[in-house]
Image (cartoon, rainbow, N blue to C red; front, side, top):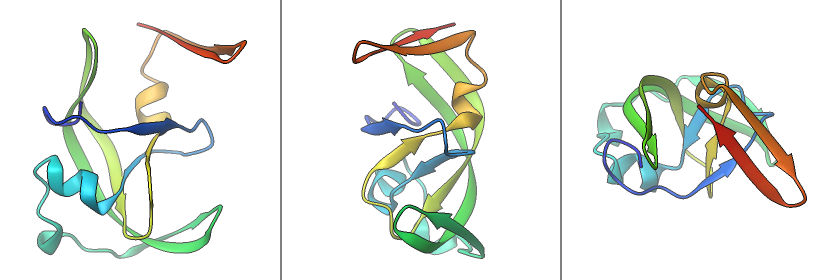
Length: 103
C-alpha cells in the first residue's frame, strides 16, 4: 500500500529508491501536474526522466514506513520497491523463489 492505495511492486535491490509508475502515483494521490520531471536516470530500458517525491507511507501487512524518498518515472511500466524502503527493513532474503522480509 502506498498512501493507503494498493500498488503492485517489483522488488528491485538494484534500484536506489522506490520508483512509481505515473498511474500508481496518481492512484496514491500524487498530482502529476505539480511534479518536476527534472532528474534523469538510466534504467534497463534506457534513459528516462523522473520527478522526486516523498511518499507519506508504504505499508506491507502490519509493517509501515513513513516519509519514504521516491520518484515517479514517466516511462516505467511497473513500480519498483527499491532501497529507500528495503534498507529500512531488519533484513530481506530471496531463497528458493520466495522473498522474506523481516522488520
